[in-house]
View 1: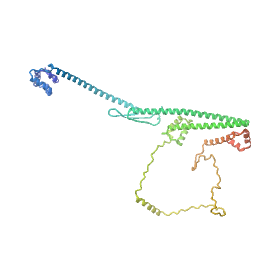
View 2 (view 1 turned 30 degrees about the horizontal axis):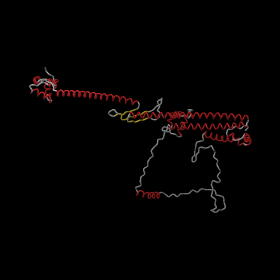
View 3 (view 1 turned 90 degrees about the vertical axis):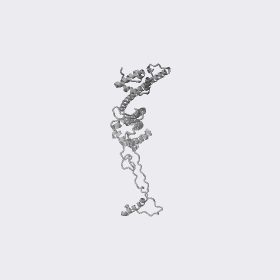
View 4 (view 1 turned 30 degrees about the vertical axis):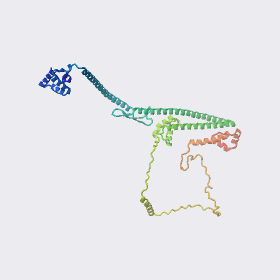
Length: 451
């Protein structure tokens, strides 16, 4: 039976006899089939040479596969088989581990790719090394309202890991919640202050209406006692109106300060900004609240002056004077330039003044010091006209209607205090005999019956 080259192995050599070996060798040599090359390759092995040598020289040769091993050989065979089985198992385990590592690398690459694509959707760019590890995370996003309009400035985070990026987002969320809680608390306080201001204003309006009614009744009935009561009611109404106005101003100031504290980076507090914001609030009939200020700011943001950015002061280098020759030549050059220009003789102006009247001579020791302001007339400035003109200025804005009303209210308060301290008899006598007092009452808006 002809053998194939694949059957020429070490196990085949251990199992054949010398006769079988020679038959295969003769067949391969005669027919020159491929088994000859396989035999030559096999006989290159040292153990194969040993088996063939023993096979040819030992007339009692027994193939290895048919021999009965002694105890030492049997034990060695068992050890060799165990070692071969262990090596085969380790080879299989290594092949399985290598395949698992390849599968893991493919799965990790696919998972990282899907994660990176999802991160881009939320404005994140993840940079990885050659092993897929995260080395940098760049997160940029812009918060918008329900209508898609930007709120605040864009946010930019840079982190070295996903955990650090999550920690920064959590910190930003915490600050945002704290800010919202402060706004909620401040708005509650502002609402309470606004309610108190409205109550004060309503009480002042009621007191003013009652004082007007009492004054009308006193004029119609010509009752000095009722007139005194009307005057006291007017004084009380004025006091409550002043309190309401002060509360309203304090409330508006607190709201404005709270709002400006939250807009340090995008609102420049100046007269132009106040005029633009105030014009919008007045045109839209909006009161001074945080929400209304925010609405006005979003509407007129493009009209407001930009917030000035701080600039570094320019440093002017000081050059040391290390050139004595140039310094020495400077006075000579200046002198030559002065000599080249024509001489200018200063002329002192002479002022023509009236000849003073003759006076008896007096000694220098007893001559009085002249006082140029002794005969100047005293000029009384009107209290209202040019009220905003400051020393050193040539122009100023006219006083506003509020300033005029404040001056009139102050004068009226003084008259009311004076009347309130009078008895009915003294008041009646005063208006009957003092025309100036009556004029003051009328100027202050206090009705006087019979006058």
